[in-house]
Length: 372
Image (cartoon, rainbow, N blue to C red; front, side):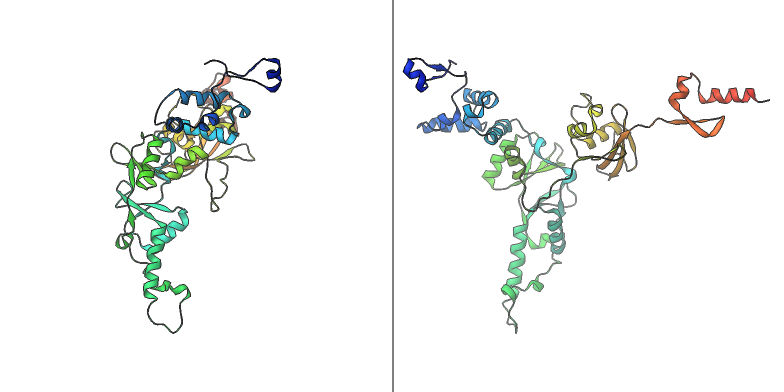
């Protein structure tokens, strides 16, 4: 692409032009052009619906151009980069894993359902038949409130000596009624983990169903993804007034050990613990500390179990259930100590015995031989 040249006021007086950097035309200039077809082509290219040189040009602008040259603020540049990278993201990259899904059984009583909604702080919950691998839909909190309000209002129409507040008789709501009897379930989407995130976003907009279950090739439930999960890939974390500041995933203790959430990314663990905890390229498919433990042990470790970590680290499982590890403690491995037969009250590190070239049994033999 030839250099783009522009004339400054001083250069115009001298009849000279001042060359600028060899960058594509800034996108704002393209948008301001009167051609509607050009804007449409750029928009489709930007969202991955059509490939072309303009997409590559935009990447160059975002990567090499300064904010003054591109016309984008740092926030806009970050969002555009995320949009361009969205078509490379798969559902498996953005979903909430199965272990973190909050779901309810179809025959749950409405009173219990209200408690689950309050504790989970979600507006939608997955509904299943027997197990989570038998999902049948979802329930929205707005549908639950509308149902309860309608029941309270219909009972309130009977004559009473004292008028009801807001015309609602909440005592008339049968909280023992089951979810299936109330018929509050809605349709949910089912998608494979390999589906591009941008395709699911378009499908959610078309169907107006904003929750999808991620199923594997055998029909089992792998995870769940909402429209908010995908949008956050573009704009970053979205927090409302009910969201609390997340506690650090890895916290250093006074004794030099570390308490960590098993869901912590391995990169986060290395950043806090140190480069010595880096597992390198040994486990490319493992992203979290819990995944590393399961891979190392070949199963889900139980509470109190010690799992050897990279280099001289050791990982103790503090909290776990049959499905996953929840919390761990990371510390340096302590050298094992062997008893000194000449002084049973004392002990020596195993490494010291090995350095002398003698085993504990050799020391016992020598002691026995010296006895009169």
